[in-house]
Image 1 (cartoon, rainbow, N blue to C red):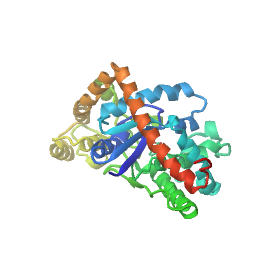
Image 2 (cartoon, rainbow, N blue to C red):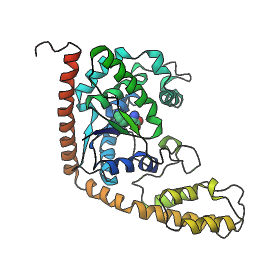
Image 3 (cartoon, rainbow, N blue to C red):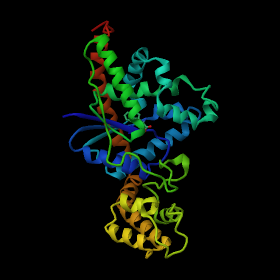
Image 4 (cartoon, protein in one colour):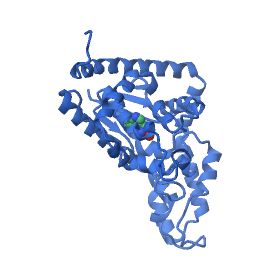
Length: 334
Ligand code: TRP
């Protein structure tokens, strides 16, 4: 069976962007692949090194979100990145195979640095070694467990490409050791925010979280951007530029056709359309909220799941690292 490695940084709760961008895909794939889902606490520390409390709290939140969204511990191993020391070791070996200029060219890292002037300077002049190098450690996450497939959102593609380059170089120098992993995008790899921004994101404040309650969802949906040319309630409008319609589509509202034609004919006011959307999203997320509540009330079960998942990842990484050390001629006392 092929192996899936994927995960997220524990820096906040998961939102619809994560859900439709990758989480739903992972839930579907877990039955056909050996699935490892990592809570990337080491990577989260690269830009939260001064806030260990935040990372620690979000490890729990992320585990709850995974379980709530349908990651099934009978089919997936959820594990904590920092508890796999082999990954740190492999990162060191990989760091010889990547030039600093190559890391500077990574468009995802570049965009992130641009948003973190408070940490890395307005031109990124104070970027840390750790943050610049996190794609190398991500390559180690994937390869230390012999990952074949990485289901992620499209912002992660540069990291997978970087991983593939490292694997080719490593195999070239030390002999065939790793497979080249592949990214697997969902049908909606990037989800727009309520404000119409190309990306739903916590830092942009345009996100609906999968754990949001009914009132919060309604309040947020009321702020969604609609067709600016529609001034009066009975003006005809263009659903293709409306975020409300965009989300109706995303959750596959069964009245989609009616919504579209009423909107185009000016027979649908935005306020009632938003109310209908808020209701539909809330209904869509209800089973997720309920499952989350169950696990919130059973923390010992969550801990057991994380322990089991971490153990499975440790075992896999130990095997792989034997191969690595042997091929790198570091197997001194074997
Ligand atoms: N970079 C990913 C994110 O920001 C998290 C991550 C860390 C990851 N290691 C990984 C994703 C390995 C896939 C595979 O969400």
